[in-house]
Amino acid sequence: MNIRNYITNSGQLAWLPLIEKGIHYNGVFVKSLHFDKTTNRSKAILLKFEEGASYPYHVHPAGEEILVLEGSCIIHHETLSQGDYLYTPPSGKHSVRSESGCVLFLSIPEEVILIHDGE
Image (cartoon, rainbow, N blue to C red; front, side, top):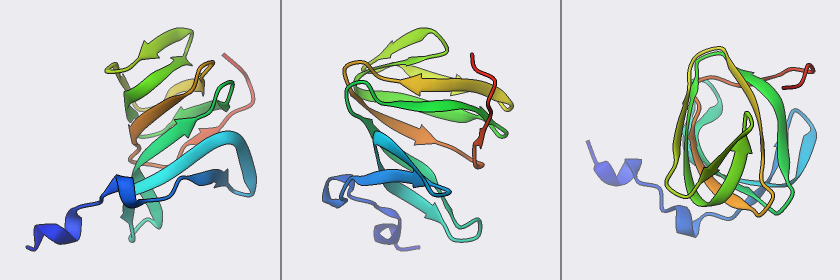
């Protein structure tokens, strides 16, 4: 195994607008850290939220892990700040918004499903 094949220098990646299934999430940007070719999706990402940006209410079929790297965000009525870690269990539901901006590390084993009934 050549470990160099598994290293991603996130500082060399550009922030790209978050666009999923044709929906552009204004003020939310993404960097893919680990793209799984077998599932054709990123399973480890960085997300950057500008001031006031949000991501809608959704469910995580296989759970999710979030680490706040910078700033703060509100998830399920709780404020998470730099250094806070959140484990969302399988079938967990929430939305994300940031009043002041933030950068998050996310590990997402399966694609999220947007749902229309809010928190």
